[in-house]
Image (cartoon, rainbow, N blue to C red; front, side, top):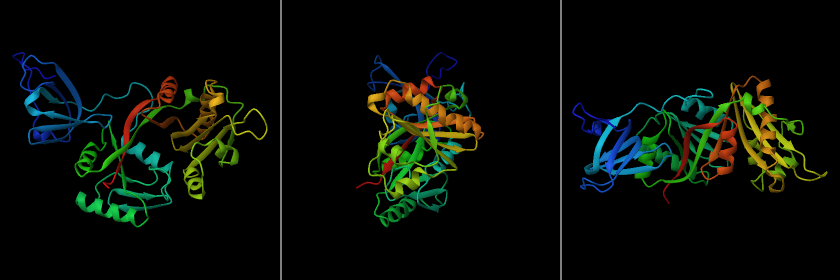
Length: 331
């Protein structure tokens, strides 16, 4: 925390610092001089009526009574990664969007409205990578009408935790009653180490055949889903055959190659064949093909509660870059 030349903690932030990354220390019980301290680091998204709201990297909003402040300062963006590829939020947002494309889209200034008959939030939400070109309330009215015309709820996808992410927009949506329904992390890592495993048993294909779809966790996959699954610059599907002819695959995966990036998804293993390294095997085969196409970096998305997947990806050299969230319009 900030310490003055006289050895005292000081509050060196003001309302003018809204939108900046800050670190604050406060007493757990305002007005009690011998209470315990808590520290919070994140983006200062508002400071109104004596209350600060700070959005942490995870997207969690923390309310801090200004009377409890003991120290505070503006801090630089999170340190650069020590391993793996360097990447900006905007680059990754565009790459991930190209790897999971909607059936239709429309521009609203710097926002992209995306729809795919409701198949996944990612393909049916607004991706805001700039100014919508009009006041926020007007933009949200357009969003509601656009999705309403298609019989869909309105979602806005935002991100937190990296330079250039949208903590302020998320805070504004929350103030308007929009509900954060889903949070996941986007992880990145070097691609070559992912390929360092025996993948001779894996079958690669350009299409998601009936066997692959039989293992895919999303049931009743129709034409819309197939179009989204097959979208992207260079898409590959991987399968590990089941133990007997006609069985569903023991494991599957999907990869989209886009320039230097390879994006992994739909890595699923038959519960009867887990803890055999099949997820690693599938990803190794896909990584090998992506390396052949010139990729060098990898990304994937993992939900907060999926502890097993997070442990696996960490061992493979991946680490979190930012979190992303889907906000649904108020009912």
